[in-house]
Image 1 (cartoon, one colour):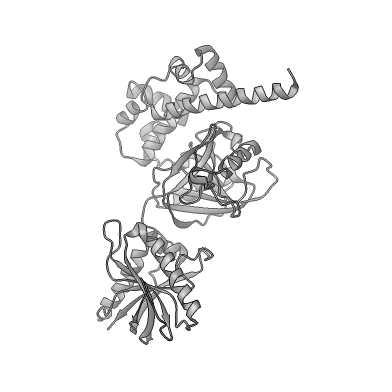
Image 2 (cartoon, helix red, strand yellow):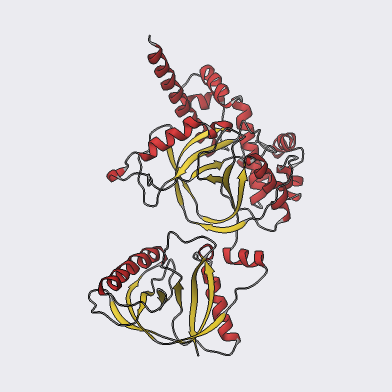
Length: 467
């Protein structure tokens, strides 16, 4: 056998082992309360118990029983943190026959009983003695994402081979010949933490991580082993930015210093780190990393609490103006496309006709827009003179008069949190003895759905006519 053939055969064997072990790890995760014996897991892997035991220990650096015990206890610790479920119920769901057996195993792992663990509000128990870092999170609403990923253990998630495999896989065309992500745009490299990301619960060389790349919106891909695709839920996150080499220390500081002192509540979703370059095993190499911690609550309320102030409402007087516009009935899921597509049509007509724009682009909400209601939304561009129009594009008037408004950044302009800013303007109008004169609108600094807008730069104003 040639050296090349031998290497190829070995790589195929490793790929086969990894594929079968991934199936086992998924089976463990989805059957926490079932008997997870070596024989059962070997059957899932398609190996003999003897061979499976050797392969499992070689790849995961733990025996099967030690791994299952650790995963069950860390799952139980998570339930103690995030729920009010009785300890007995958690013990049974974690696969323990009696609460007493669960308590003994839990205390051996965490050094305290399950009830004490819950009473002490747990985050401090997750931390080792790391030097605290300066922590100042921002609160951000993230949409749902699809992630093309490879399950890893410990330092594997920073392996160059892992990231090369992911890039090559996701760069290939998916269904309909559409690549999974834009080859020109920078990728978002993600490490999803399946265990608490610190040494208090899992040794760093045994921590389960999913190394992945975020797919473009509406991207399609047919995964091939060892690559798979998973869904990352959107929601509110506390985001910590760090430039440096101390990724582990940053996780420690978040859970040791920031979380115990804050009054936020964790959401039952995985934390993850995101960077613009693949994570490196070279500890001398600085990287810009964003750490995403899933939390409960309203983005608007969290931001208001963080700044210790309510939105500032100002007033202006505006004249009536000519306006070209397109009106459609849309729900919240269709809103973004309507804003973008309608603005592009209107901007093209303005450019072709040579008329002069007379103010910022607007989106006027003539009715309620959410998941259930598809109120009419009018997208418009004010103009000095009106050119000939046809089709969906209509000419009309943008009402002026007294306008109450507040300014938002792109980070603040997410649904449903943006509704809090509408409430603030409405409340100002009422408290100052005025009445609503017309439909509220958003006036954009540049254009709706501006992909080049900075997250913390002025993005739009909520403007509400009153009398």
